[in-house]
Length: 516
Image (tube, rainbow, N blue to C red; front, side):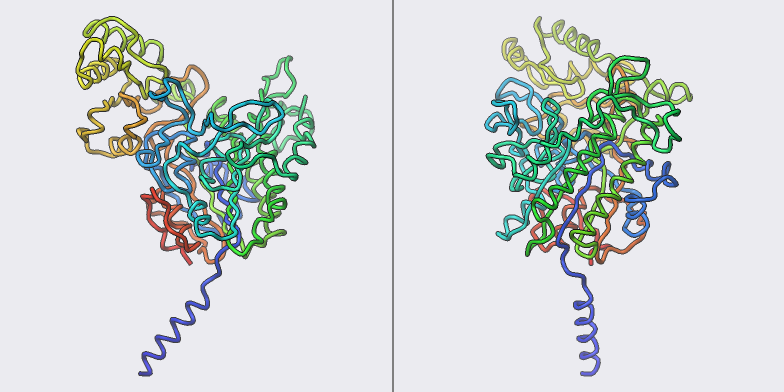
């Protein structure tokens, strides 16, 4: 009896010691932030990233399961735990056979953009087929609020989910944050006030200097003024000032929506997009990437300080990851005697078309879209009474005959499971969703890409799918965890912490070592 009492009392003590549910979950994505950026620039971090690395859980071997490592897919995975094969978010955009046009992951002609320019189509999460943690929280019928913020519409919409109170993204046509009628009929007062301040004006003509520059004598990376010898930065999203707008808008959202002060937990999903625009232009080895990474660390620290002051660190759970990594610029790799190069997409399309025309009959055999996810012209398949699987195979053979192609999968192979059994094939299979995917899935060799300049991502290689995974908050044990995990594990872990149902398409597992 005494032993039972001791066990009972010990159990009660453990229950009493368990931290309460967080009042606010802050889910952060840094767009195009490879895991090695945490290591390469570690000595330069002294704010937000350092706080998470020193005080939180750091999963050093976190990866995406899917092959199509692009923005929409990574953001849809983050708080749903689903792979593209379940969520239906197979890419940033794809060819829609029903409407016979290219659609984006969040385009929605049934909505209107809430913008000063009237009549523009809006965006929504309707193309995502699964729930998110925020959806499951809202379906409990409580007073939780869910807000998504980003420069990109897909970066704001997809993590927040279907039932979000709003998702806000930046419209560079009006230099303002917008949303769509899917969420509401009018921007809230706090958002209108923010837009009225026209904060973008403070950087017109500004020069992007290294963060540690000593005065104006340093060489700028680019300038916001067109002309001259310096590279033109382009739109504000392609500079660190784009991230600053996101952080400032997030602070306003916290105050305006009273986040962290409801009876039930709130979720704020923030995606810092500027890192991606910069990375595409200059590549992961450029000094601009180091600079914007350091500046992101400082911005995160600013945001965390604001949250601590308005919600309380003891009431806040922060989870941070990236939606994908990025490949080195091919010319940079070649200079250091590494593999890599550029593939001519137009040439590949022509080779495929010539092969199919020669075997089955003349015509335009490919629909609009990238060669890496090619769609066959089914009208021609029907016209020539061809077997679709044979047409797919002939097209795949034409691609395989080209240099620097590692794999080519056909729709028939992916639907039937007739693929090589290894990690690459599994990742490709998890990216395939039959109602939306194309008829070919092309995987170039590592470090090869179809882009004509800069660099890109989107392949099932380590440099594209190994990303940070950091968590900080009450009950989260500060440690570095080296076991291999998936970003799909975030959603079920948050569901466990918040006491809600795991999202409908989740394939992840609870990170049990950090669940309070």
